[in-house]
Length: 208
Image (cartoon, rainbow, N blue to C red; front, side, top):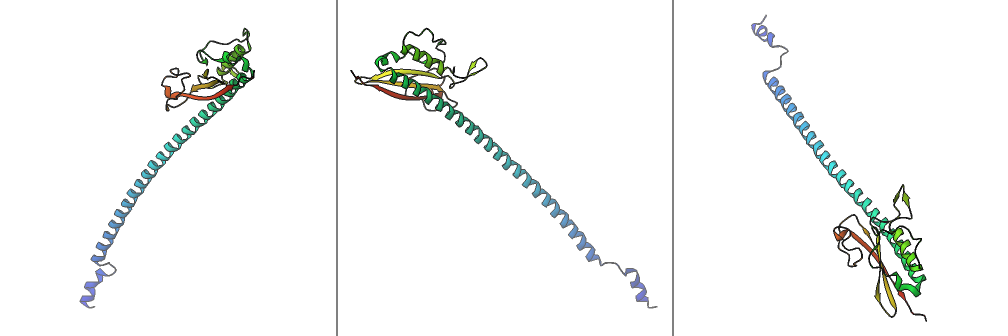
């Protein structure tokens, strides 16, 4: 047997040394790539969580604002009904319209609860308006819940020939906004920007 053949026999089936080195390098590169990919995936997950958290906070804030807006709209609708009620009462008793002028706000905190002793139509109208402002039209247990929060009302004479009266309804809002120009209820709601107002005018012509 050829000596060269015998010398080469032990190396048969073995990969060259350079191939082993290349294989190890490829394996290390693949491992680094996997670690890098795993790191990028974690960063993506964290970014997604942050974006989702801000989205949920925004949605919660929007929902809170919508609830507050709905509540404000509901209170304003109730105030307009009470405003129209007093306007109609004055219009129906035009001959005694001056008796509807109030010395101060009626409604919340005025102590009026019983209208059976009212001696005149105007006195009864004002008493019933006061109890309506206090929410007596609807009750939950022993609490009046038929009106706005802190509802009050005023009637002022603001003109003559024809006699003109301004009816104002005020109540407690949820947020501090611009201070209303009308004086009814001023200083009764803490910061005056929480005071909400609606008003209307009633002109009473002299038909005699």
